[in-house]
Image (cartoon, rainbow, N blue to C red; front, side, top):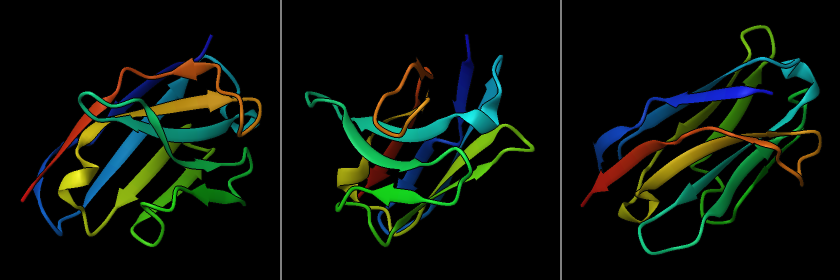
Length: 118
């Protein structure tokens, strides 16, 4: 089992920034791809960004490309999501997830709330 704990969410104004962190324990973090997903009220969970186990390759949803940056620190068992130029439509519960590949996630965190006020 791998445990994932997100933090860093909060309330921010439009145009502001937040940095989310997700700390992993229980498995060899460096062997896992990591992803960030989000779910807004009344909507389905959606993909935000993902990163390969080594941290060398990243992928982004079009809606966040150029504004969000994912990074992975294998020495600290942590994946980060730097969110800049936030918009009200970014408001959601943000989850991190871990998987053997970037397309199949096995472990999920409990989520951290991000609210962007207009």
